[in-house]
Image (cartoon, rainbow, N blue to C red):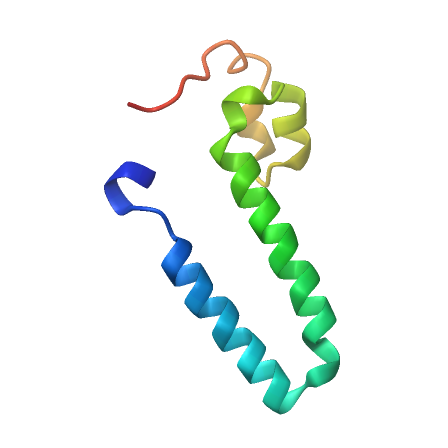
Length: 81
């Protein structure tokens, strides 16, 4: 999907700048929480890009779709392409 759609870096940067500006104008107290949330999303995105290098148990633990990483799929995970 990344090859078909492209990397979301530009859109993510636009979103983060917009979020910072919005919070700076309206709710400065939420800036630290927004920074933490953005950092966690970035780490999740980067881990997701490298899921082949992680044990299936870790993928299952941090994934929103835990059922995808069932034991019967653990041996069948292959990169796209």
